[in-house]
Image (tube, rainbow, N blue to C red; front, side, top):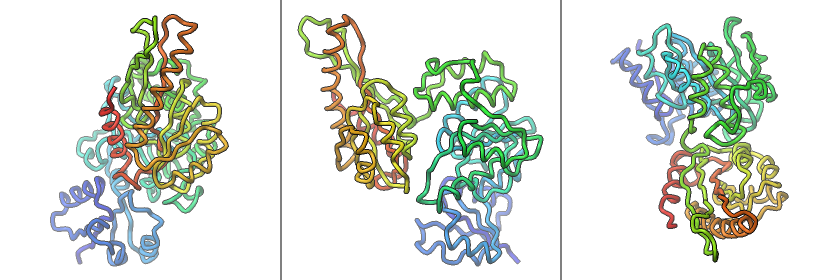
Length: 441
């Protein structure tokens, strides 16, 4: 009797699973279940023997849970990879910072001539790199809660970054969200390693779930570089660099090579990415025309929760304008309000589905807030306001200083999901960059 197989969700991972399964068994009976093709795609899950769930399909859906109770086996691209992979797996999870840490660690190990691959949420789909792996290979996987939730195996090296509430629109509650991430470490053995930020309670909790050697990481304990040595701004990025360095040291990378890579790392796209700098020459009498101020535009579209937007605000001391808002994920925006208070933020521009919710929750920060209809309007208003600010900042500073650069930063850090107006956070970030590049000086 032919086994009935389904692929639930036909995005990047679903397509890689189909290719893998067809290569192993060209005659396999495989059905694609995706809401793009059929609105009733969840209707008959119990009729299959095995279902490969893509991470974009929530594990806690009632239809999935009913199918599990009826004996249907659920797997995923990540689970397949863990079953078949050769070499050492470094799994990285956390609420934010996974992509930055994974990419930086990959670049460091590459510079140290390691046989290293980057996959998971970032890089290539995990299934595609299986044929390339050897015993000495190192695979760095960025793993989300959705990839980890039904996983029954842990990484050889688990890396747990800062964890805070997120995805509460798709997880039942914070407990389930944290529990979903626990697979990063709870199936480890005593020969494995788990790195975690010692000052984050949830990271510490996940590490305790492991039987592996526990390695707490504290930024103040590593003196190899300082925050100002990095090209990527923000204390959160400094922490990510410290974590990547800690893992690289364990894997035998020399300090001088690590330092070289860290100092030259410019971060990932859509994560506090400097898009454009516009120099503004004020019309001041008796001033050197070379004296100018700049308006810097930062694309932080990957910021999908209030904690990451708060980190973006704290990354800069200069006067700033924040553009935020999008689809709500059931989160509390009080961390954003706290960061805005005494932050030198001159204006917050909100758009998107949750703009009124954010407005209510940041009101206590006393920062001026304007609501607009879309991203284009937000960018134009931010630029107009920034030009006024640069003129006043330059005038006041140059009255005492003969030559000084001044800056106003425009931060696009949405603190929200993108699906109310955009395909995903990358699409949203690309739209922001296009708008900024089309601005006239």
